[in-house]
Every structure is written in C-alpha cells, then in structure tokens.
Amino acid sequence: RSPTQQIMWGGFYAGGLIGMLLIYGLLQERVMQRPYDGEVFQFSVFLVFLNRIAAVIFAIVMAVVHRESLINNAPLWKYLIISFSNVYASTCQYEALKYVSFAVQMLGKSFKMLPVMIWGMAINRKSYSAEDWCVAIAVTGGVTEFLMTGPTASPNDTGNSMKGFVFLLAFLALDGLTSTMQEKLFKEHKTSKYNQMMYVNGLSSLVSLFTLITTRTFVPAWSFFFSHGHFAMDVGVLSASAVGGQFFIYSQVKEFGALVFAATMNVRQIVSIVASYINYGHHITVLQVLGLAIVFAALFYKSYAGLMGAQAKSTAAPSESNPIADSGKEAPASGNYKAAEP
Image (cartoon, rainbow, N blue to C red; front, top):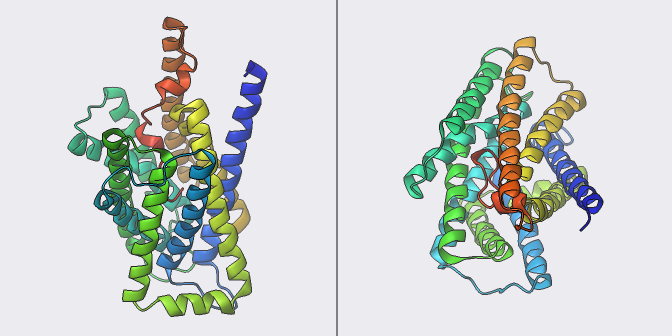
C-alpha cells in the first residue's frame, strides 16, 4: 500500500474501533444503570452470554473466510480456564456499573496495567523496564486522585460505592489473568486469533449458560428481554458493537501493530468518558479532571515512546516490511488485545 492508503486505512480502523466501542460503552451504561419501564436490569451474566454467542458466530465466519482451522489447536481445558476468567471478569465489569459510574469503571481498566505486569512476571517470567513501572505508577496515582476527589457512585446506588470497587478489583485480577493466559496460549500452541476467539467464546457461552441456570436467572433474564422491547433492541446493538469492536481490534493489530492499537484505545477512553458525561449529565470536579489528565498523559507518553522506538528500529533495519506492526507483536500492558469484552 502507498503511504496515502496506509493513512486512510489507519484512520478507518481507528475511527471504526473508537466508534464501535463508544456505542458499546454508552449502551453498557444505559443497560446497567437506567430503568426500562421502571425496572432496572439485574442479570449481568445474561449480557455476557449474548455477547459471547455473537462473538462465536463472528469468529466462525472470520475463521472460514481466512481459511483458518476450526479444530482446537490447544487442549480444551486451557481454553476453559481462559473462559472462566473471561466470563467472570466481564460479569464483574457489568456488576460494577450498579454501584460506580461509567467513568470509574473505564478508568479502572487502566489499573489493569499493574495486574497484567504482575501476572506476566508470575506466569510468563517477564521483566519490565523502569519506564513501564513509572507509567503504571502514574496511571495508578491519577486514577486514585479521580476516585478520591469527586462523585464516583452509580446513579442507582443508594448507599456507598464500595461494592463497585470490590467488583472492579475482581475484574482487574481476572482480566489480567485472561490476558496473560491468552498470550501464553498464543506462544505455546501457535493458535490463530479467530480459532482462539471461537473456542474461548464458545466455552464462555457454556460457562455463562451454566451460571444462569444454576443461579436460576436464565428464565427471569429472558422474561425481561421479551417484556421490554427497548431493552432487547439495546442489547442487540450492544452485542453487535462488541463484535464490531473485536473486528476493528484484530484488523488494526494485524495491519499496524499493538502499539498503534494501544494509542487508539487511549483515545477511546477519553472519548467514551467525555461522551458519558455529556450524554448522561454526570457531575465532575476540577480535581477529577486533573486526575484524568495525569492518567491520559502517562498513557499517551507510553504510546508515544513505543511508536518512537518502533520508528528507530525501522531506521536501523530498513529491510523490514512493517516495523511498527513487527514491534507491536507483544502488546503493552496498557493495551492487551484479546477475544473478550472490549
């Protein structure tokens, strides 16, 4: 591709990713925090179940289109471990919205830099530079300031938001484990992206279905679905936007590398938080704005440093066809991509 075509495709992937995940985030907040005909939806696992079914269909179609094998490339029990952490990480993410605001949930994801780094050290024996630790500490400090200097509760939370923080901590631990185990699976068994996405989401569908049945929420969830037409429409668009987000994630990482993806996700966080405040009329303090500035300054510095390093490598090794994509084969802790909730 010519440089102009590269820029156009890069803008298309970035715009598509931000747009899809913006829709996903706004609907996630709508579904979990706003009432439908006076009733608030309570069955988080049901949303995970529907999203995973949609993701399985998408993965099968993409695997067939790209002529990838439909046979599992790794033992099913390894996919199952990822599926368990995947389902309950996503459930905790939805449950947190019952008690904390969308901005808190979104910023909480930045906290996963530290869990991902810790899991990486424990499971994959990774090491990180002083710069990585400084960025992680700055992000953690900015998020902490945001949480301590203004309102953080969900509009529906009548008490304190401590439960929401507990769910966020559980989400961070489980999501960090999911990312680390998927990376390990990629390396040890050479699984293709859509093959792994198909099996992880397929088994995640079964795990979430089992959870719905054993907790006796399967029938009430479907009853809510069929008795509230607007809810059914929102959930349909929610699942479609989640799958669309996955398409743009995989496409961007394949074409431009994980560093560009991480930078795009940083922009997505800003756009989603601002859109949430505007769309739902949330209150924010000046000190919380400062906390946001610290977080995103640290994340953008990380992305900028990574991209500059990639360009330096391309100058040193001009024979490489796509140095930025090659340098991004290992995603930074702030931007791991996976077959999971966006």
